[in-house]
Structures are given as C-alpha cells and as structure tokens.
Amino acid sequence: MRVEAKILIALGLFFGLMCAVYWTWSLENAGGVMMFFGMGLCLLPGSYYYWWSRRMGPRAEDDPNATQEAGAGYIDAFPGSSIFPFTLGMGAFFIVLALVFGSWMLVPGLGLVIWAALGGIAEGRRGGSR
Image (cartoon, rainbow, N blue to C red):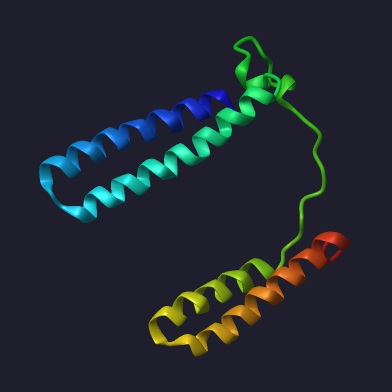
C-alpha cells in the first residue's frame, strides 16, 4: 500500500500547490474551493494508506521478484445479489431531495436507509440467499 499512498499524497500536494496559486492569482472562490477539496480527497486516503503500510508486512506487489503465485490468496465465497445497496442509494437520494423539496422527504428517506441497514446486516450475518 506504500506505492498507492505515495501517489495519493503526491497528488494531494500537487492539488494543494495549485489551489494556493489559483486562489492567489484568480481571486475566484469556486475553483479554489474545489481544488482544496480535491486536495483533501487525495490526502485523506493517502495518509490512511501510508499509516497502514507502516503497520503491514510487505505485499507480493511490493516485491519486484515476486511470482504470480505469491500474490494469490485465500478465495472465499462472494456475496450474492441483494436489493439493499439499491435501497440504501434510494434512501440517500430521498434525504438529499429533502434539501430541495422540504423536510417531509426525510421520512421515506430515513425509512429506506434504516431498512437497508437492517436488511444488509441481517443478510450479511446469515450469508445471503442461497
């Protein structure tokens, strides 16, 4: 994860430098704010990856002499299809619509989010439908 961390941190520093230059010279707020948040979107996962890379052992991807077999790991069962990711997305959509159309849209939105969370947890514990 060290390579991914270095790439993301370098991108975050680049966006930070460009944000400072753009904000100073253009005196325009929207682009500077977007670059600032772009910097954060790179530095946040980059610093997390760097933090984990210092605590993990080297992966097969980090070894230049590794074979393809060295990167193979344990393959477990994959989850089946589920309605709950779609339900969670629709609930989040209704919650955002509440900002536009009124707080009454929070009721179906929160209901869908709670239903998706409980259903996803229950499905994950029992192993999905087989």
